[in-house]
Length: 457
Image (tube, rainbow, N blue to C red; front, top):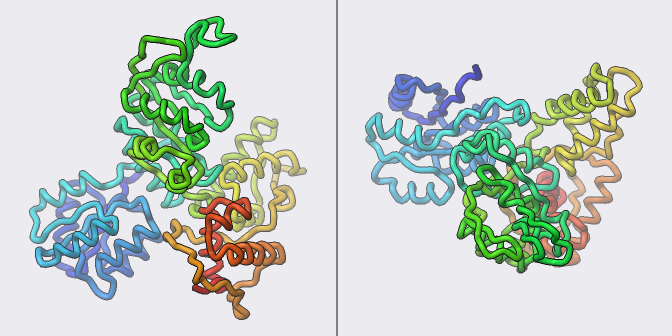
C-alpha cells in the first residue's frame, strides 16, 4: 500500500509546531514539519505533501510570502494559514493570494482537523494508465481524483499534447460513473455542418440522407462521461445550443420534438487561452462560465521533468511489444538526452520519439542516435510560469554577458522572437500570431530569456 502523503506544518514557534503536529498524528495523519519558510520550500522541492498548514507571522519569510511562493512553484497544493485575531486583514490578503482558508488562533484541535479533512489532497489513485512521478503530476492527479468523486463539469486546459484526454479518462475511471460509457468527440475534427447532428443526434427524415434515427454523443454518454475535446473550435451558433443543453440537462435531436433528459458528466478541453478566446469573440462568455466549474491546467512536460524518463520507458515497452521487440531498453545517455529536451510537443512528441526509436534501434539498447531528437533546448523551470505582461515599454536587448551559451539554432530562434516582439510594440498576442506560436509558449520562452539575461524589463 502506498504511504499516505503527509501534511506539512510550518511554524517558527517550536512549542506550537509540536502541538499542531501531535494533534494531527494522534488523528492518524502523517506529518512533516518545518521551522520556517526557507526550510518549507526546501522540503517541498524534495517531496510531495497533501496540505500545508503555516503560520503567518514568521521570519525571514512570512506566511503570505511563503503562500505566494507555493502558488508559483506548486500551483495545485492547498494551503491553510494560522493567524492571530490582530492579523485578520492579512488573512484576507492571504485568501486573495490563493489560501484555501485560515485558522484563527487560538483554535481547538477539532477546528484544525476539520480544516485538514476539508482541504488536503486525497491520495492519488493507483492507476497504471496515469504515470505521475513528478510532484506536480502527483498533485494534479490527486485533484483529479477529488473532482472525480463529484459530478462537476471539468475544464481541462494546457498545451497541445500534454495529455488532457488521459486526465479526462482518469476522472471517469475513478468516478461513480466508471461502469458507464466514456464518449469522446473532437470538436475540431468534424465539419461544422455535421457537428450538431453528431452531438445531439437526429430523427429519421430530419435532413437529406437521414434514413433512420440516430442517437447523438450526449445520449450515447448516458450515465457516463462525455468528453468535448477542443471545445473552442466549436462554431458560435452551436455554442449557444450547447449552452442550453448544459443548463437544462436535456437534449433534443435534430428534427425531434421530445427532449431526452441527460444523466452525464461533461468534461471539456482546450489548448487555447480560454480568456483570450472569450475576449476576441471566438467563444461565448456564458458558455465559458458554464464549463469552468472545476478548471484544471495540465502542466507542460517540461514543467514535470521527473515524468519524462518513466513515460519514455512506458512508451518504449508499449510500442516495442506491439512491434515484437519486448526487450528494448534505453541507454543512460539516451535517457539523459530525453530529460534535457524541451518537448514543445509534450507527451505526444515523446511518444512519437519512442515509437521512432523502436523502428530505428539496431539492437536491444536504444542509443541517442536512434532517438533523432531535434536540437534540444534547456529545460524550463519546473514551476508554472508567473503571470507576466510584456508592455510596449519593455526593453528587448541581448545581454553581452548572458550566463548561458545557446546553440546556433536557439540563438536564431531567440533573435527572431525578440525582433518580432519589438516590431509589435511588445504585444504577446500579435507576436504569437506572427510567429505561429501559442501565447502560453511565447510567455514561457520570454520568461526563459529573462532568466538567461537576454530580455530586460
